[in-house]
Length: 67
Image 1: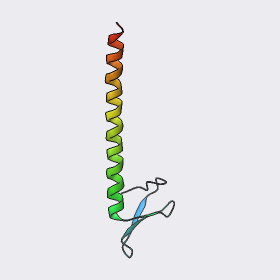
Image 2 (image 1 turned 180 degrees about the vertical axis):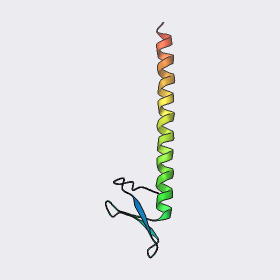
Image 3 (image 1 turned 90 degrees about the horizontal axis):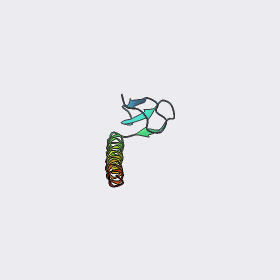
Image 4 (image 1 turned 180 degrees about the horizontal axis):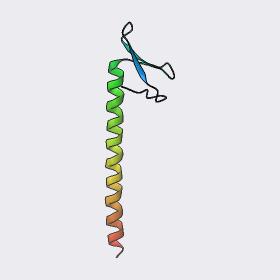
């Protein structure tokens, strides 16, 4: 079951409008919007992990040069 990206509430599919509606805040999403948002969040997490790894590698290099 998908969750709202605004408030974290549960999304319910409405057949008449072919959209997902949040039970908490009332925000609506299309299927395409949910896919795009999921991909965007995955990519941002991937980039954050990449930056963290690069920082860690630099820190290890910097500390090893101080010895």
